[in-house]
Length: 115
Figure: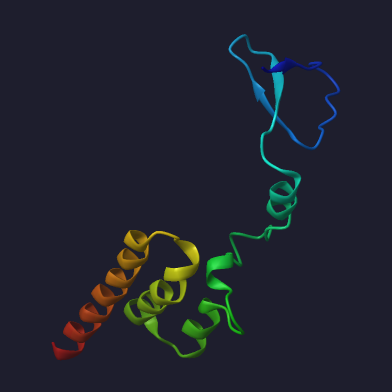
């Protein structure tokens, strides 16, 4: 059951989800997740725009390789999908989708070379 909190000067406490209820008041509910999961969530990288975790596996970030090797649009996208397929998605369906996208970009590059 949600518990109503003070509208002004709310002090956020760990382990609670804060939300605006149907009456427009700010309420909170105890989160059911364990402290261990909460702590791991807090440690996720904060810069998901410039350094997404699914592109920063290993020694090199995907964008650095694409730029250094001057891969261009088609091959750069193929490398992007190959490098992230097992890190961004956990389901086989989504992983296969990323690999098929990589193949699609490689085939487009081949067609552009062949003329």
